[in-house]
Length: 194
Image (cartoon, rainbow, N blue to C red; front, side, top):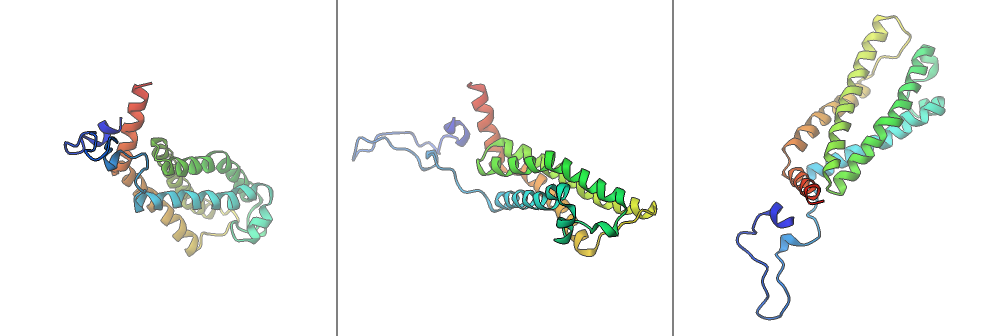
């Protein structure tokens, strides 16, 4: 399988060394994988950091909203309409069930150089683009509906804008990455030979 994926090694064949009877193995045929590119490392870090922040800011808020708000991850209860607090807690539960596992599977798959890491990354990026859009939309809807809420401040807008932009870039990068193409080919060949 490795020979098919990597080509013919520019004509090199597995031969016996004239000095010893040990079989020659080209350097690319070793079992160790090359290190991840800087871009893929950045994507892994993005997933890990987001999973950690979601665990603290969303998951914990389901049970300890006031504590998480005191840390600055949620808006304090007294500044919000009661329905907004409960909506935030419900969103936190959904994020715990859906988004955190996807972030974790994406990071693990990329670190293992498996194609499912790219698939989970695309899912994580799509969900991230969706929730950042929700953040903007809720801000507009609460204000226009006269619902007691604290508008997003400059820092929150910068964070969700960065998450959105990184997700767009990360999705594009994974589509264009030769590393990911090799993983897909390897996974496809392993399924054909099973």
